[in-house]
Length: 146
Ligand code: CA2
Image (cartoon, rainbow, N blue to C red; front, side, top):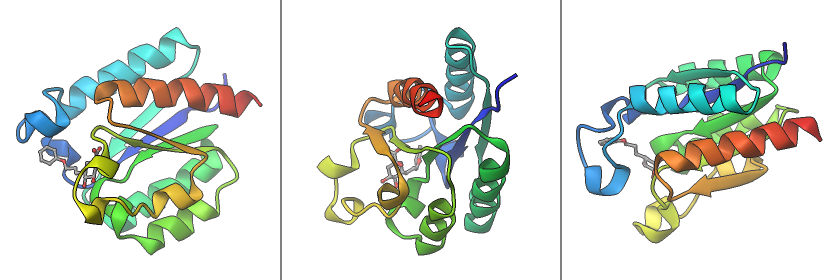
């Protein structure tokens, strides 16, 4: 059995579906997890799906992914735009890293235009709501095979 793909989610994403549906859609985090599990099964992969509101925990999981995953998909939420500690952790990985966002930060407030995560990622999928995650899974499987 191949190693799983880690899908890590950062702060406030536990509130998905409850606020700002015009920006983030109506899917809950549980819906997203189900979608990822189902899509992974279709493409012959498995997923470890987690969310945290804590920067240090996110970094612990990034390090764990480096030991246990074939690829990492990360929606670091607000930490995308602020965390050099997270960037340092991502930079230590030799597996493919894919940045993912529900919304399109480039089309929003100027402070969302800077992504530290992007500096360590092979690529970014953003702006497609839940579809961003399944597109990222497709990319992760392809990248992990090459
Ligand atoms: O679009 C994305 O996926 C973001 O990573 C979401 C982050 C935001 O800071 C990034 O710029 C883009 C915010 C996550 C907050 O999640 C909420 C979900 C529902 C209601 C309120 C916040």
